[in-house]
Image (tube, one colour):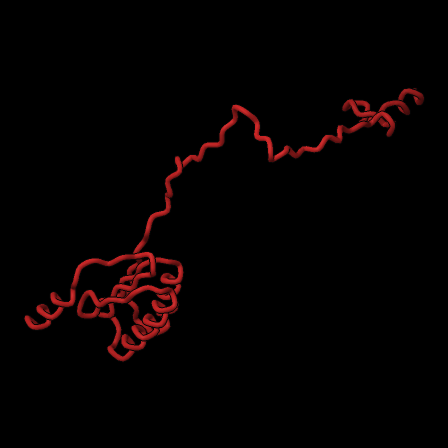
Length: 143
């Protein structure tokens, strides 16, 4: 019985040999030549070639001057921003507008007043059409 126990091993049980000479590996390279694509196989995009990324406009109502960092980050990420200053005092709002003017200049964008205390900041890839300045003057005259 001791002779039989000596020949039994887990490697033999799982079909593996204990003899290192019997172990062999196929060492064929797994890389394919990129110069000759396989015929009949095509790679198709799930999106069908359309860009699925949509343009976004972020809305902000800053209360503190420190909120300008988050607004500027959105502009740097090529998002348009609408900023409503009704929750902020005039001196802080002027400082934020100055900061945003610098940010808009850095991204080659634009900043426009679209309401009494509302500004639209756009990066370079946005085009704004229409003229709101005439409408703003009429609104302020009626107040």
